[in-house]
Image 1 (cartoon, rainbow, N blue to C red):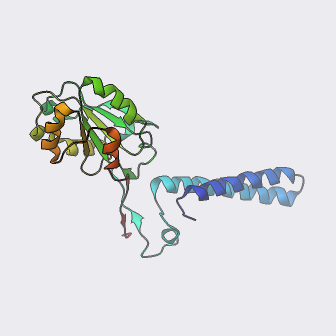
Image 2 (image 1 turned 180 degrees about the vertical axis):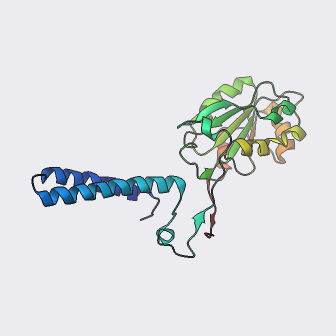
Length: 226
């Protein structure tokens, strides 16, 4: 059973409840009362520790917990500058990095944060960039908001938007959120040439098709402890 897995946390919580119930039933017997209280408190503390370890990755395995010299630990994933503003759920943000002025877009870019992003601080997320017009932006925003594991950036280009200017976009995005890798590019027919010139490959026309081309959210790489 994994040290950071949910089954171990659930097992610990279940045992704490069962021991607490048994303690209440045997409350009149001092030995049961004392042993039950001690064991219940120990299980509660253990459960809290397991939850904290799952979140922060202090000990990714039983070997690491035991101090094995060759046990690996995760390399921390740097948080994005916007991570603290997201709260406990996904969101749709008006994204305004300094570089956006040079992109000459019709409106501010919209960054759609997936619902599982805040709960997975140890991972980076693949990105879909959509170059669309106003009629398609609203429906795409609704679709992307319910898609787990994928960051979606919606751009509404103008005639002044160039592939050269957009070259700075991936770096700006990686600075503000935990994005990873080259984005999959989605474009309506009008903006398909711009998308191809920017990404170096043909754009797709559907969100589902773009998502299928992406890798899974990436866990932090493992390293040997120093």
